[in-house]
Image (cartoon, rainbow, N blue to C red; front, side):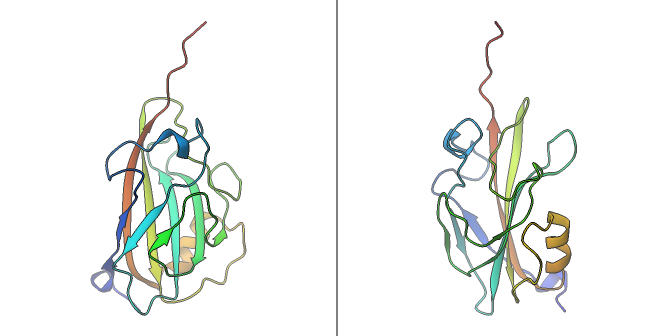
Length: 157
């Protein structure tokens, strides 16, 4: 069983945006709503699968999941507009990527990647909390990339 000290750090980047910078419109509800490409470095050799959770902690209802995916093959790249693994239900109650779409203001979006020592034996459509519970004692490494998004303001008529 791993302890907090045993968990290594993954380095998560994207060629589409830098950490702390704006997420391009094409990856949001105002664009193509496709997932951005991600690069994952420092994956431990014993990794059996990756999990990815994208969430917005600034939502008025609390932390809001935009994409939940697990059993991703341990690879250094998640390509744009792909479904790299098994999808769970997001906060919209859908099993797909749904990009940033804040009702107001600038929100932060965390792309959290976990390297696991196993494949997760949970059903497609599982909720983020179920995925987190299944991963609990299997995390070898984790990392995150944070992007910002602010919807274009529509002029009142």
